[in-house]
Length: 360
Image (tube, rainbow, N blue to C red; front, side, top):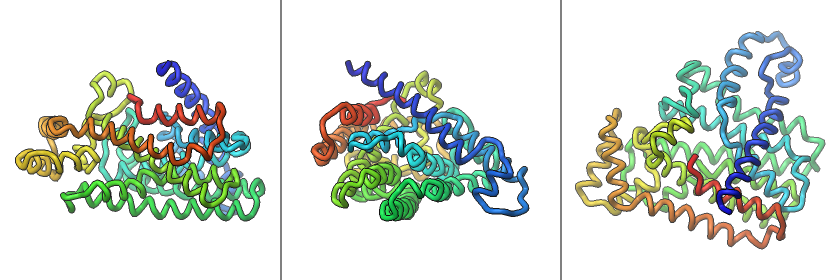
C-alpha cells in the first residue's frame, strides 16, 4: 500500500513538473524575443544576445535538470484542501519554485559546490558572475508574475501576497547568513534551538511562502494563515533533515541514479542537525576530531568517511530521522482540523509522508 501511495505521489509530481515548467516558460521563455523583453523591462535598445546568454541560457540549463517541484505541489494541494480550484492559481504556483531554484544557484556559489542534479553547478559552467546574476534574477522574477496576474485577485489579497513574498525573501537571507557563519567554523557550539531558528528562516521560507499564499488566496483568516504557514515551514525543515540524512546514507548506486554527490555537507563544514547532536553526545576525542574535520578548508574522502563514522557512532542519523518524523507528526496535529475531510486532504498527507521518507 505504501509503495503504491509513493508511486501515486511520484506520478503526480512528474505530471505537475511538466505543467509548472510550461507555465514558467510563459514568463521566462527559452529563446529571447524583443516582445518579451519589452513586456518585462519596458521599451528600450537591448542586446538580445546578452539577455539570451546571461539570463535565459543559464536558467534553463538549471531548470531542465529536473527537481521534484514539490513546493508548487504543496501550494496547489493546500488550496484544493481548502476548497479552492487549484487550476485557477497555477500561475502563482510557479513562484515558490522559481525562488527555490534561485536559492540553489546562489547556495552553490556560496558553498563553492561542484555538482547539482548530476551536472556541474551553474557557476562551474557559466562563471561566477553570470550564475550570480541569473540566481538573483530568479529572486525578482515573481514581481513580474504578480503584476501579470494582478486582476485575478482582490486588491487586499494581492497586497497581502506581495507583502508575504518580500517578508520571506528578507528572512531567507538572515537564515542563509547564519548557516554560512556556522559552516565557516565561526561558532562551534550551536544549540538545537539555534539550529531550528536558522532553518525556520533559511529552509522553511519557501514552503512557508507557498502555504501562506495558498491560505491567503483561499481567503482564510490571519490566524489560519499563520498556522498553515508554520505547518509548511516545519515540513520544509523535516525535508531538509531528510536531505541531510541522504547526503551521508545513500549508496553509490543511488547517488549515481539520482545525480547526488556524497558527503557534500561534511565537505562544506555544514552544521546539520546530525552534526549538532554528535557534538553534544560524542566523546571529547570524537567531538574535537569532528570539529577539526568540519573546519578544514579541504577534506579528503577518508576524512569525510571518518566524520560520517562519528555521526553514526553516536546515533546522530537515527536521532535525525526520528526528529523529522516528530516534527511532521506534531505539525500536522496542529492544523488537521483546518482542512475538511476528503481526497485533497489525503493527498496532501501522502505528499508530506513522501517528503520525509524518500530515498531521492
